[in-house]
Image (cartoon, rainbow, N blue to C red; front, side):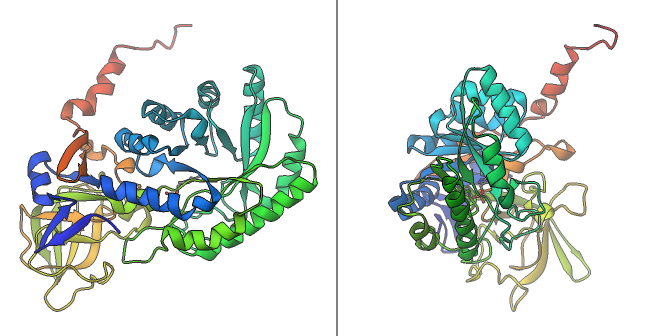
Length: 437
Ligand SMILES: *Cc1c(COP(=O)(O)O)cnc(C)c1O
């Protein structure tokens, strides 16, 4: 599942010890395994080969340019959700024709930039947006390839904040309304509306949710084709799961086993947008213990990483397995089973930020004898982790390191105090007068 392994009680990333990385680069530190990233990408590629899909890595899950470049070099496309992400992947060497641009609120500038760059496809989410893209593209003398995001009204059984395929959320157009939307833009010169896009949430560990959503999508495509629309593309989105608590997520092959038969020989180009399933288990966060404090029956392990480095526990109540990087005790068999037991101590792992919601792990059984200076690993922290880091409390964002076999390299330097104020000092140079016209 990943290349982070305990050997004789010590954690290794591929062939580099966690303690070495922490000493060399400091903490808090994001560590990625290149081998794991590439293996996860390859597994999807292989499992879905029969469909020859365009795989568009979801940049928002882990957006480091060096990681994007790894995928670009292997021919991956990219799923971007902002002008900033588009900029990033173009800098990483992406083929613009293999970029898809999603999001409910694209600005005029973002649409112009994407058209100018010659991106492959837009995923449009509303009639208003289609009008906007049509207008801009017509003005620029282009025709944008657009897929309409439809909302199949499938419950992906994930967290309320991460489900996106229900009727009552902001994403996409209700599936019943799609035919009239296609009719409306049939003759638009600035648009080639030729496909549909489905993305029902994340993580979706229930393969049947994909079956339900794709079957609805295919029925819609039949209706549209019957109505004379030359539909050639189906984008099935992302959302494949990852391992947080154990082996809860289906493998790429498990997803493929149900999805591939549905989509073979349909005369459709298939696009996929995996993010988490590639990156989540390819990264971890190393953090150093600052203090240990007993409060009643609770042991608080105060570490140098916080919600600023990893907000998922605070934001979604997300579960991340934590364990000392060096421990005499065996790592629990299943990562979820960290309930206090026998020789472990009930602990909360918390950060220094001034918020009660600032925790990385709650009520976990951790080895006794943890003390200041010890190193703790927070697992499954490759997706929606560093990508969501902030400078709240004026905390410089951490460094990111990529491990490849016996070597490691910094792929994002640790921010300095000067970085914290740099953009504020720049602002001083451009005082705007309210009276200037
Ligand atoms: C976030 C997102 C993805 C990636 O989801 P994962 O769960 O990381 O695979 C793909 N497509 C769209 C439209 C998204 O918003």
